[in-house]
Image (cartoon, rainbow, N blue to C red):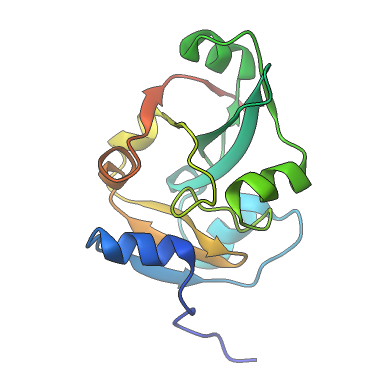
Length: 163
């Protein structure tokens, strides 16, 4: 099957266009549980530059989004301490989907169904370019990391743990 170079619009790409954000489209063959390792391999990019979108919740079950390097884990203890909550934990897939409006594996921080606070690992902002989900499995958009703070108002945090 031939690879498509263009993917039909998603709520994420609609939001990017609305804000006149320049981005590139990167399509790959989605692999269940392949994560950023698989997308980075197929696209030939450094996994550290692929940013995963994680839907989590605090102790009151209030949802939030964490943007993290593909090759790092989130230290939920450090994150909770920095954002002033008692605890942070990942949402169950069906709950994450309800909050974001996206299927797990295709979650984008852009154009989510529900407005949620967004936190970004501060070192992501130092990269020259990032690849982040465009709102569909097997679809990343390449853009400047500054878009995360300018368009999403993402707040920088230091919560990366080793893989």
